[in-house]
Length: 551
Image (tube, rainbow, N blue to C red; front, side, top):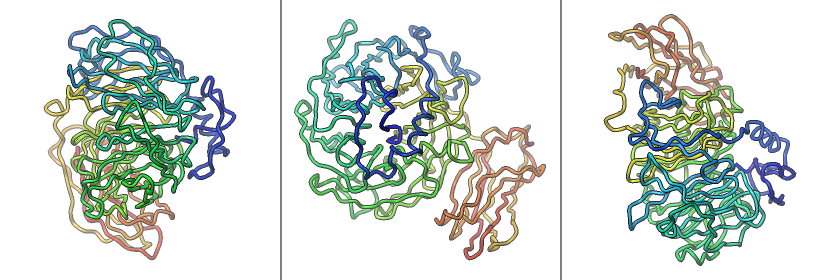
């Protein structure tokens, strides 16, 4: 997040050089708010974990009764842990992966404050550290990398002369003992950059949050990896924190076959056509009422929906649960925020990626969280697994899981922890997932009086034993022309109310289509549950279309 890059805070990175930043970004980092964000980040800083590596067990450590070794888990087994002290030191940040097309071996590319580590994880229970590519010119809290044509492309923030390191990954094939590597080449048309994305289909890299292009995507032709060439700038909307660029094959026929970037631009989702690198065209720039820091997001595989994480809404909002914002991109000129998933955990979300029907989220203190996106069309996501590498607790603070990489053919997922280092896990989602609980639904329309008293819709639950779960899923479909008017509660059979949504005079969008997770473990499951809705302002009307409880 750019607000963590601010002048005069060299404590963040040893050897870092302060930069003058353009004023074109959505949020100026040289503000009291930006300085406060940096101070909050550093206040959460903890030293790297120095425990011994967890390797060598042939089958790893299965997740049993909610634990794998000391880590809380659900449907995710632990294979190994390599602490940072075993892979070059420093603190951890981003991570990516590479599969050798010649041997099929899988490798982790692990970002650290002082360099990039390369680890052979082809035997995931016994990963092998191969060596370190030192940072180019100093240390940085923020390092990012992606892969194209068997080369790693690495950037770092807060280092004036870092540029983009290019490293030929096939060099790892012959490594027998840990080495200190040198980059094959370094691209120097920018110095620091916060992040990098690559469209592997076209062979273009997008350095984002650099000291060029007003902080927007700095485009580089990397089709010949060791000879990168400047291709253009996207600067119309200022600073971009992260993005995904694809050849578009989604439902909007107007843009099929075009190269599009979906940018998380601090307070908006901004979509840009970059087919012509010398003349990028902004298609849409869309904000949302709860925006605090639009951080990162990813397309579903059909390119119809975009899941967005906001890095500061948990810290700055009254509801501390991790939130994922769901966007319908049927019309790229008008993206629509259709709903918000509320996690049962309370943590800051950081980086998410989608593979098949699952979204893999690295949510800082809540660790790796895995969501089923099969019902995204109904604005519903369901958590099916997790592995919490920061076992001492959740909470909205900057510790634990920075990022993950879920794209290995083996099904292994790698996670990089700020304090923990490389964590290798294996989800058991198909066939290992706990069977879903009973679902109860009410589809009868109930009119909501305009500026009137609260109304309720009932669901009678029977045939269950014991109490409701700690992650009771409450799916709500309310049609209303100004959803900020609405206050929504779930009322348990004993009359206890659980607030799902508060009113907000600034939220002018239509409809509430969302799934909320409620800790209802103190409530008896059987009985009459109610959805209670009140319209607290006049002039807009609506009705409850449907709602359900998933036990």
